Image (cartoon, rainbow, N blue to C red; front, side):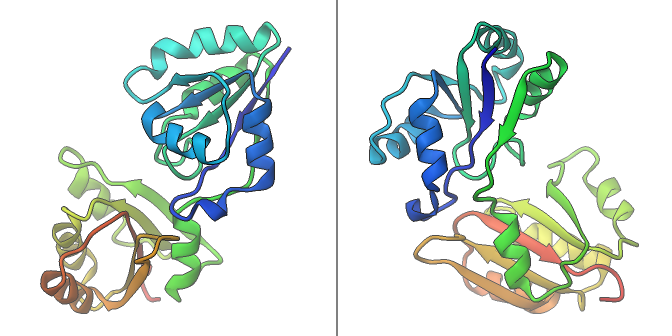
Length: 224
């Protein structure tokens, strides 16, 4: 029987790719990629020429069975997403779950995940935290926020730059405008920055300076 490798890829700087990740991708019989065009750039940079197959949230239900069968037949499969660690707000959970159910060995390589550097650099308590990823865009959004109103742990969210100011405004309404927050953007890229302060202060900043790039919001828990 083969094996499934979950392989993190850089969230920005290509130098964040590990030697082990490169070797694993070069040795795999098949690479499952969220977007073959995006991953194609990465693979070309590291001279990786292995077979690649699309595996994203719109087709993963259909492809999981065939992938499991290929691994059972002895193939080694490597799973990557566009950036970061597959399964963390990206496709990957379904194929990992089915491999585990079928007794297939799954190894996840350590590597890039956007929320870890954002949390560590935030200056907010990080011994315990609550990762929320992307909030529901419409249905269930305010219900989820209200459920977090009494959360004592530091909270982490992913957000689009186009919705950032609106989301921070909803946070201010739910958690209070004086709650501490750190907004990191473009992690590991040339224009990486973190804007820290109260929700009121950070909202004022991004009203004046249009947010761009990938966003991670780190919000203090109650009484922190």
